[in-house]
Image 1 (cartoon, rainbow, N blue to C red):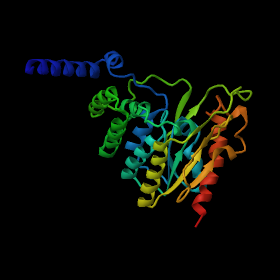
Image 2: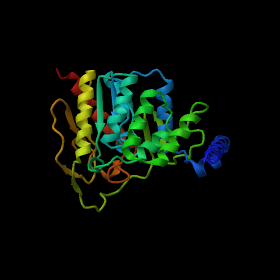
Image 3: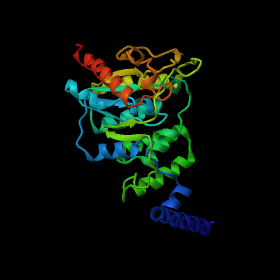
Image 4: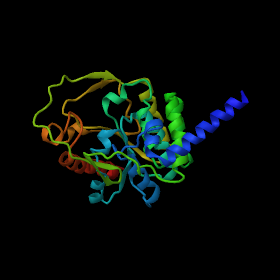
Amino acid sequence: MVRFGVLLLAVWTLGLLASLVNPHVESAFVAKQSDWGHVNKKTLEWREADLSPDVMFFGSSTCYSGIDPHALESHGLKGFSFCSNAQGPQHSMVLLEAALKDHVPAMAVLDLYPMLCTSPTMSAEPLRDWAVNGNLWTAPWRDAMLTMLRNTQDPFAALQMLYFGLRNTWTPSGDRAKPDPHGAYSGLGFVLRSFPALHAVPAKTPSSGRWSSTALAAVDSARTVCKQHGVSLVLLTPPQLVEQELEGRPSLSGMAWIDGNAWPGAKTPGFYYDDHHLVAEGAASYSRWLAAELNRQFQRP
């Protein structure tokens, strides 16, 4: 048994070294790095730049490709986006806690794409994205990923965390990333999308659902954490060409809610590349509108 354990450790060590040296081995046996969503670049920017945003954004792809934090600058405000693929409120709450250990902003915004609020379980996709492509491995961020790991119970994500956590001590993630042909990283967590715009509203039946108990609990936890740190919490529904309605939404006590569907361009097909993701022109218009709405929240007593 001891010999088997030693042999297993030796094989694992050789595999680790081979993966570190050879990108093909890493891609085949551990994970393929990707620029999609640019978690690699946004986490590296956060790690290396001296940033002190007034507003922090947390959410999914509707956030990182729809909200350009640069738009806040016309109101004398600064922002940064900690958004990733399929990141629901359960993930955002955990990442919010980690981010608050680095910096306490005046406001936190949770971008809540409706269908991600219906899941009773925590998806492993954001965890893998942050583990494989992320460059934040200090204690708060490592603890955040461990919390997601405990909730997702994904053994392969555990392996990826172990490997990329060690790898990151030598070189940042992103050096072997597959390029994103339709996404350019513009800084502050924002990804500029260059897909062709729609010409008409997709033929899609509006879906409905209900907030899951775990998503509601995550929002309640975010409210508590923000209150403890003196941070204003804003919930945000992203704009959609075909709106999705959910029942059982959270109580608004102690926080504000902004509906992105109130944006004047929300039902303009040319601003989207599918029914809920914005192209560059749409994101620019929406971001200006949202920045003005958030600035109004700052002006409230």
